[in-house]
Image 1 (tube, rainbow, N blue to C red):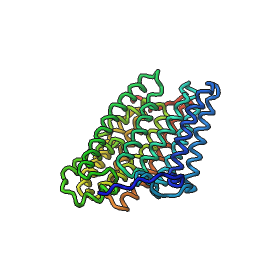
Image 2 (tube, rainbow, N blue to C red):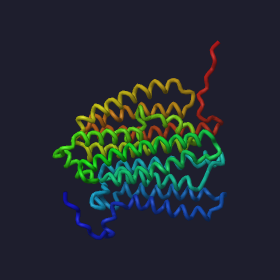
Image 3 (cartoon, one colour):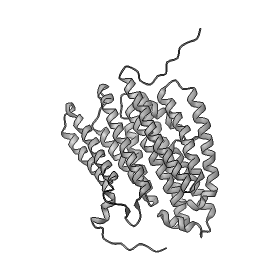
Image 4 (cartoon, rainbow, N blue to C red):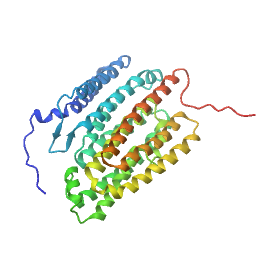
Amino acid sequence: MTTPTSLPLTTADLLPLLPELAVIGGAFALLMIDLFISSKHKVWTHFLSVAVLAVAFVLLLSDVGGQGEVFHGMFIRDNAADVMKTVIVLVSGLSLVYGWSYLRERDLYQGEIPVLVLFATAGMMILVSAGSLLMVYLGLELLALCSYALVASNRDNKLAAEAGMKYIVLGSLASGLLLYGMSLIYGATGSLHLDVIHGSIAHSDERLLLLTGAVFMVAGVAFKLGAAPFHMWLPDVYQGAPAPIALFISSAPKLAAFGMAYRLLEAGVGPLSTELQYVLAGLAALSLIVGNLMAIAQANLKRMLAYSTVSHIGFLLMGIAGGGEQGYSAAMFYAIAYAIMSTAAFGAIIALSRAGFEARISRTSRG
């Protein structure tokens, strides 16, 4: 394996990174600006965070900076990444728009909430453009750490604190599984670059080691997607988090998790797809069964939508298990449709909550 020649980066080399730089730069700027804004004028922090996402949306939609690879292929901006990033930025912006009145009316608004959403959005954008295992983990952890803080943002609520604790413990376990799988893949191929890993698998004598690492990575991906039996955190997190945070957690990160699955399972360990099909198909079937059956028994709308997520992830995994261009294209279309649908569903809950309705399904007794 040859090591890429180290060349100095120029401004032109960073052009494909413009949307990410806009979001990260805006997040750092708002982090400082919020220190000097009084509690009565926090709407400006919220407004500016939406404006930052609007700028990133325009940059992506206008293809500013162009497509290409940065940092020796560690960051890839292609058509699939641009489509997913555009929807991720749109849904993240909608979560902030929906959330302002809800959080303000309940005295839950904190200036760091939109900043955390921006950093989480940047993590998702990095994740779907990852060209190496290192970039996958960087984007995933940036998203995860911000999500943990967002779920527990209502610090006076015991349910939110419990949800945040469950999320960080189980999320750390899933990250460990994913990292262990990555280490096995690195040990078998000697590279962190997904394209090099893809090319090395066909000539590798470490088939068992590669399969073991791939299975661990599938487990990590399944947790981030919320597939059964790795769905234990979903109902508690959706119920405990404030409705606008649940909206954000349930929509954009699922599309980012699909992007991670595409990069790892197709661009990375694609030659192992025949063996992994059985694992993915089993996860899909179990998710469909558990998600639909458990949703029937729920008396809370947010918990019901959590099990609905598990069921939808089952359909998504069917496309991933099919593999190939058609399978992943169908799965990406489904992930985008689900992200928009979930935004609308939680948006309806937020709208109804203004009339004194939160998320409880009333049941009338028979008799």
